[in-house]
Image (cartoon, rainbow, N blue to C red; front, side, top):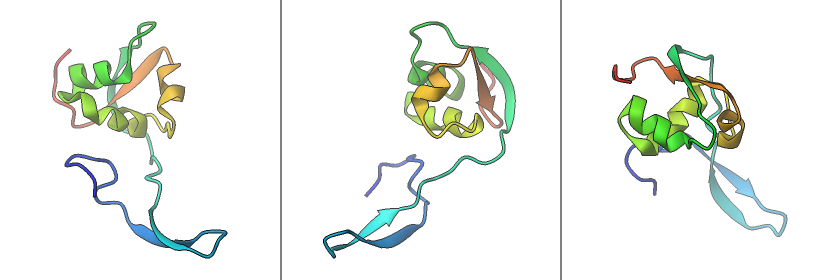
Length: 94
């Protein structure tokens, strides 16, 4: 159901009953945990999170790892910050 590397790949599912009585499977929101960063990158005006992820994580599609490391559920909230924490375990580059 999810592409390889998706943050939702290993997340638990639940059954939800909608207002009209329809029962559907849903994915629980992967809430961020405690921030675990190895350093910070300066976020330039207009710079997209996928560009930062591509540079520091080696894969632009893993921008959600930046969100998790910075306790930001919404990517736009992280994009508004001056500094973006780079998660532990990221390849050393820069």
